[in-house]
Length: 103
Image (tube, rainbow, N blue to C red):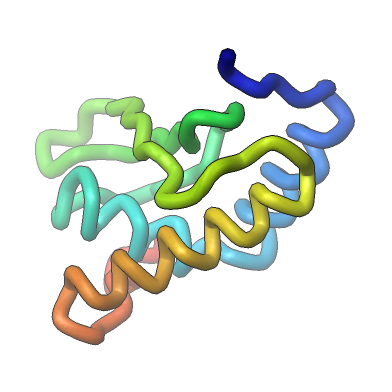
């Protein structure tokens, strides 16, 4: 069964990711969804994965779901999963951050 979080938890984590980790959002989406993505924002998550929206090369808004690399059951698990996802993204991009379009 998919773990769901209350709105306060979701709002706090999204504010943190979109305020303090904009470049990390870009790295994750560049590695796992679209290397040309711009204007990336994390827009949701549950126990199965995270949701990001971005603009593609044509300027269309795209929503993508990226599964967590580890089990997420509690709030603290989200942080660990995002860190692991980011590490995997950096590795997939050849050790480079994908934040070249952090607009």
